Amino acid sequence: MSNDNADSTKPAEPLLLEDKAANESVTRLDVDGNKVPLLDELGPMVVNSDGTLSRIANWTEMTEAEKKNTLRVLSKRNQLRLVNAKEASGNAAESA
Image (cartoon, rainbow, N blue to C red):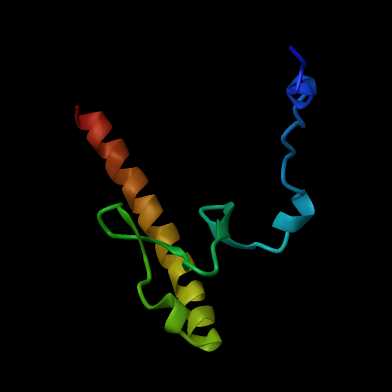
């Protein structure tokens, strides 16, 4: 019986991590002092007033000026809503 599976005895190639330089082109948004990646095709995450997360449905149809203004407003609003959510969860923990 011949060994036709000589390739199966070779060690498998190790999986490599992505190059960090490739990720440097990702736009990042400052949220509560933390830089989070912004997935340009999907648009930024929106922190809703009830603490849930969503996205802007028409992000891909917005002009660059609209996107820039939206990011400016959204960044400030998300920070405020995150602070409010933390305070609310702190108050709920104290009353329990």
